[in-house]
Image 1: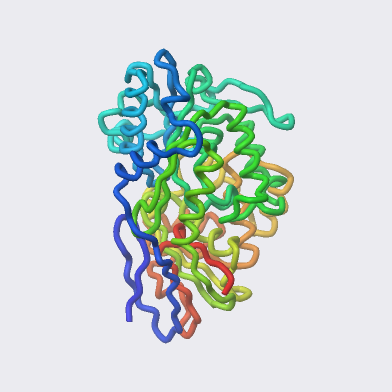
Image 2: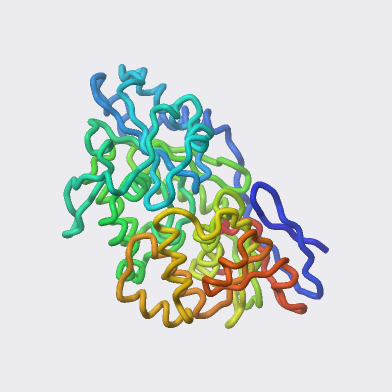
Length: 409
């Protein structure tokens, strides 16, 4: 019998001979039309409508997600521009900033594909082009100069499970996506990531999420339009106040994505798919989502197996380079983890959480274009899933690991 997981824009099939196999497949919710959902969210927002938050002569910045998020930004930006036009704000008053954080810049072609007819309004975020707008508990809050200079700040976003924020979206698109190294270094540093409550799928009592929300207040995020998704597609949209939007869509996502599992599997085969399986940096989210979520389903010394393209190797952005440099220069996961507890630059945090996983579990990346990169980063490369799973193993298959929340039975 064959099983399948996400791989690029398709599904990857593989046999698991002589293995006992369980498939973790969430209900997935019901898909909605993104444009209809966005229009409905804008007509019934959390808090004041956008028209009541903007003046006709305001300049407006819209921060959108980058290529690492499967957000329908073309649809969301069109909806926001339509609402702004009804409030008297013309297109020439609007700028779009692509929220890269420390990821690589998007190409002109990618921006065109993402934003369609509104691509001409967009610029890539550059963390070297930020201004300080205040501080939170002594941490300077730095924001892209275009965002800081505008009267009204809006954003799109994808509310999906996130290793640190619990769920992404809300203030995160602006605070991290269009932010400077200061708050990225603080929020993604070892002290924050080791704090109680900083966990996949948790927003209440999560210090990481609380900091993002406070920083969003300091930046002055006026209004967000976010969606959430599942394997079925876009399953909801919400607009208005960032905190309430995240709470609304996180509840929708949990209902669609949670799967109850045990905790004694010899191996977990986890799918990632496009766009995140283009880089090792993003692909390793599957490993940390499995092992560092609400429920770690692996037995001691169990392994995580991830088929991924890795067409861009480790990744080309600042964060991705720092991630690969830490991993490739380490002699072991234990020594890497202890060294990184002393601190690291923004973007390298993914190496820290990956080291945390590798202390207990081997990670195998299969079917990739960059096996040498995998092997250099304390992980194992294999040609096929079957060759990475030992015969007779008790295996959990998670077809879409980044859209599945493994919870206690």
